[in-house]
Length: 125
Image (cartoon, rainbow, N blue to C red):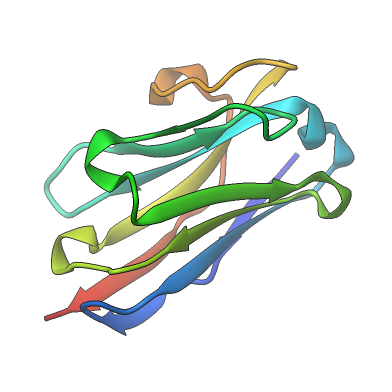
């Protein structure tokens, strides 16, 4: 059972980037999934979460309007489209799955059972 995050990189402020999180098993199509990020010296923070069907979505208040989460269960993949990027968005971005079939959109890291390895996003000013 693995999650593979990808798509990070170096982007200028104001730019856009799309992260992907590929799951190794179709089982993940039944799980709530989320994105978290961790900047150097800071705690891991919630970014966004999406329910198993995609019908329920949650965002950190500070990111609403700039980030869009989505998933394609046929491809066992979750996405995070990030627009209008700011230097303060610089962090390692982690994807996670809660492991609870047909759950909602948990926002706490402790609610997630499976984690990807993270992908680095650096936004230059």
